Image (cartoon, rainbow, N blue to C red; front, side, top):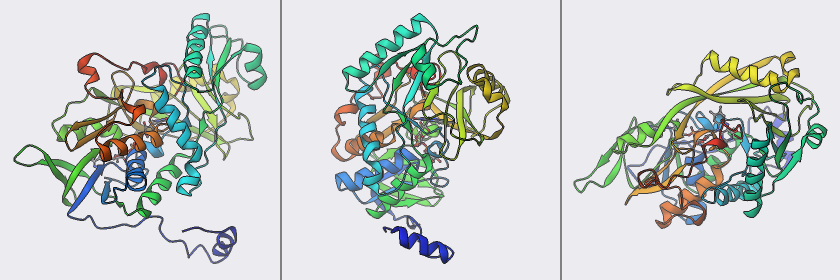
Amino acid sequence: MRYSALSVFLNGLRGNKAWGPAWRAPEPKPAYDVVIVGGGGHGLATAYYLAKEFGVRNVAVLEKSYIGSGNVGRNTTIIRANYLLPGNNPFYQLSMTLWGGLEQDFNFNAMVSQRGIVNLYHSDAQRDAYARRGNAMRLHGVDAKLLDRTAVREMLPFLNFDDARFPIMGGLVHRAGGTVRHDAVAWGYARGADSHGVDIIQGCEVTGIRRGASGAVEGVETTRGFIACGKLALAAAGNSGRVAEMAGLRLPIESHVLQAFVSEGLKPYVDTVVTFGAGHFYFSQSDKGGLVFGGDIDGYNSYAQRGNLALVEHVAEAGVALVPGLSRVRILRSWGGIMDMSMDGSPIIDRVEDNLFLNAGWCYGGFKATPASGFCFAHLIARGVPQETATAFRLDRFARGYVLDEKGVGAQANLH
Ligand code: FAD
């Protein structure tokens, strides 16, 4: 449904009683052409593109909790395409293109804000590495500019430029990067998928995968009964190892917690995303005024959606080293999400059996990939062959030794 400004105003006067739910709450049907496990950004985007772009509408998304309860509603909202390797770069560039038109496409305000991202460098070696990354980006048609210390100081005068250990020497700017309101992305895709006939079933945990006499997948056992499917697509992010295990797959993935923080609201302070190149810290400012920031993953494997205090201290230390003014700011809240860390830092989008499809291994960087991941996964499920920008994300690359090693793009290099 479309709402005009006047109808929104009048509805407000009537106590907002006329708003309908944005998507239905259907009972699960006994069978679907495609069942998607996981109602995060990737599962919902996959369902949306399957229905809208590929005409596959008899689809269910099964979510064990509620839409947005996973990482899609827990991340620090950064989008970017500042990748080095040819296997990664065009895919993230496709995602940026889709972000650019997303709000018009699904008619929902996701607050897409291409405010830029600056990766700071603190040594000659780091500058050279960023120069190389910037060159690779430009070769793929992605904007990138290497700034010196003076130019960065003009942009971000409040940073600690003369820190004795990590003086700021400059930064790599990627202007198309920025932020997007994360939970609105989940809601927009959910609403869009629902409007094309997809059943979004919340409170429905997949507990097993049933195979027939031939060994082929027949459907899933869930807390709401057995659901048969022609094709099964796994998009369970932080739980991808556990869900894949139900299909007998052992993934090259470990689950870790990543924490994030938001401060009290401040007046406009920083109009871009900034990453510290010498410590685990990055930050931006939300439209409500809070500084949103984070650092590295907690150092142990876990399926808990909360982290520990040692990392809180670590992030605070790095933050104050980069932005001394941060020591005067009060923290409003912090939270954690579960990362499925692949061994080379790159994701998996693959057809692992005739009718079994896997989307996993997004590490700290899967939010920015949401539109391209959904589109490419839908393409693979509908057509049986990978979309051209997602040919490198195969599961067997680990066994073959053709890894797509870009793990530094996460918190280690603080690019998030
Ligand atoms: P999720 O939202 O986690 O979706 C998976 C869903 O599967 C969950 O809702 C879960 O409940 C469901 N599920 C699991 N098991 C089952 C089951 N058995 N049955 C049914 N449902 C099941 N990425 C960026 O690009 N930029 C960032 O700035 C960024 N910052 C981050 C900061 C933090 C603190 C965190 C936690 C993550 C960050 N990420 C970032 C990473 C990004 O959020 C994830 O890579 C991405 O959201 C994962 O995909 P998803 O949205 O589908 O995951």
